[in-house]
Length: 286
Ligand code: NAP
Image (cartoon, rainbow, N blue to C red; front, side):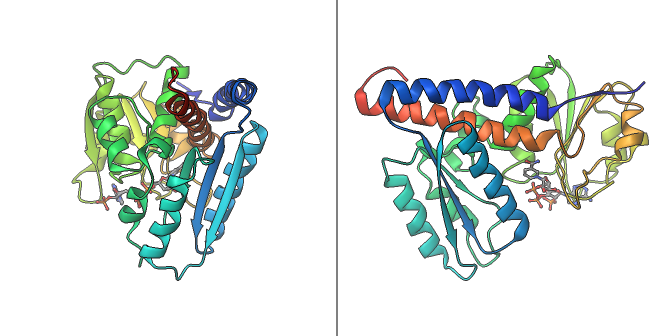
């Protein structure tokens, strides 16, 4: 078997087309341009690239972006103050704090300074709880993008055994919750998991979210399984792509799979936030 590609570039392009139309309608109706604020701390080159890509995408769909770049030595308190200011600013619809922040900063405190109505990257406790309780709200952007990609290919999830490798607050944990909400049976694996190969071999759906190239061996994949590789390190995913593609029914390429879906989800959630804010201001429907 040679797997069909889950083409994140193609699916995200369709989502971004839709977002562009929604932005145009929003601007026509309100005279206001939706705005995403991006907050970047320090000078990690990869983080700079990610933030620049997000700002470029905003421009392409007709949204504004406001870039806040802060020195690596900033304190948690000052970062929290900056984010609170954005939370209170009526011109801002969404806030993205680029992860990871330097290790001396309390990232959780910084995330929690994002107003839940502007949490378009789905990183606050409020968004996390809504995902866990299946109450809508903003999904974590990468997990939300993964679900949108699976849905674009009509991949059935109910009753399927999904194995998620990684349990970070922004990726592994929330994607497992979103899969659970779709009635998958979910197993989480992490750095203390004993016999990762055995768990992966039992999976109908594998989501790899670690950041270790080649961690998931192609020969572990159950024939016909769906493989989603969110890992990204040295331009490579977590899964041995060629060997896994021989066994899987569907697989994401790296790059071009999960990555583009993350940005598309972020912008889809930003236009939604703008509509919600406008509805709140005017007392009309969201
Ligand atoms: P993270 O916070 O470092 O979490 C990594 C997870 O992998 C942890 O839960 C860790 O377990 C687990 N892990 C480490 N070694 C393992 C092993 N040998 N076996 C099984 N699990 C292991 O990373 P993250 O922020 O979630 O990101 C994960 C990857 O996704 C990275 O490559 C990142 O670049 C990529 N990513 C991609 C996108 C995108 O848009 N495509 C977005 C976000 C992240 P413990 O919890 O036990 O430490």
